[in-house]
Image 1 (tube, rainbow, N blue to C red):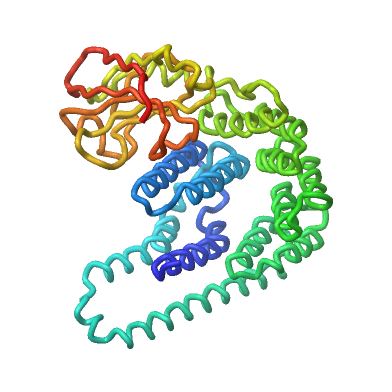
Image 2 (cartoon, helix red, strand yellow):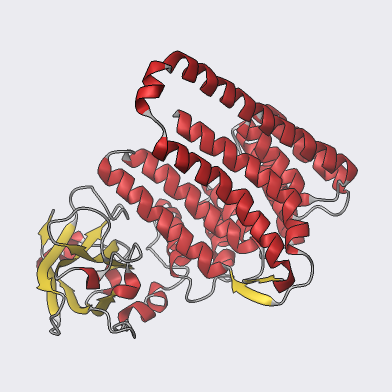
Length: 427
């Protein structure tokens, strides 16, 4: 891990612990301005996936690292859905205190940015030994500060033990410090201190920690998931983890059962989460020799994508009519991922607009516009000509790979004609 990464990981962990103490007084109890949280989580998830895809294309990470990171993000997204209601209210009277929180987050970033911008390379070269020692000392100090913060969290939990999220944060802090062998003990202590006030999420984390320690879900880890579901039968994280646990134990039918219960809790327009659950179910169904069956029908999920219209602001929009060449029908499964995109001609980087569907949706007509931009400002309206296309991939990864079926065309962004795309070649 690079030095910069160590700096940022340490800083992030310390800020997270500080926020545990700061958020209650900062946010207060009186709430009157609603902010939709669920959509924000979904947007952040998609942005992080796109960043990983750029890293994969540039060679910064390999396909295995991409897969591991993508699975972690999927689990985080599902867990976030259970963390709170869809709306988080903010007290207008606490605006000044929120500014303090903003300062807490932004000062480390600004300080690092100023240093990187105006630091003198020649001076660093002349004092490299001294700088290395100072950097080592800074890292040691950062480590010490983090450990001090963890100690303070432990003291606070001794005084106020009825704090489920505090105990979970303490356990994760121990993992970060490399003290993984003590994590199970922390959860056991937490359950003892919390008495009958243990929340479902803590039982889920306890079960996961036990499974990591023992290398198996057999026995107590599964018991903890059952305890979580006894408290909260619709807990999304518990249902998702239970399904994965039984799949790991090669009990695919039981795994599907938990994912079916999870599917019942997912709103019909939650496209990305629906895809994650369906893909997990497909894997279990395949091992059982069953025909693939969507737990959440994708035809419902993509309805809004099919009727996409140009942006109200008058930005550029391109309508595509996409079909699969019948000669390649036997090469495609309905569950294969379908990427539809518009890219700047002769320029690398993220697409100007993109949609993710499945091959089952073909043929279709769709409009790509500025509202589908991957990065703000980097949209269809920013160029005169685009490469539009559709790609079917079995890997589910937008960038890289081989053996994907593709159809593309180059078109002017000022054109009002529907562009016909025929997917008819491997690339």
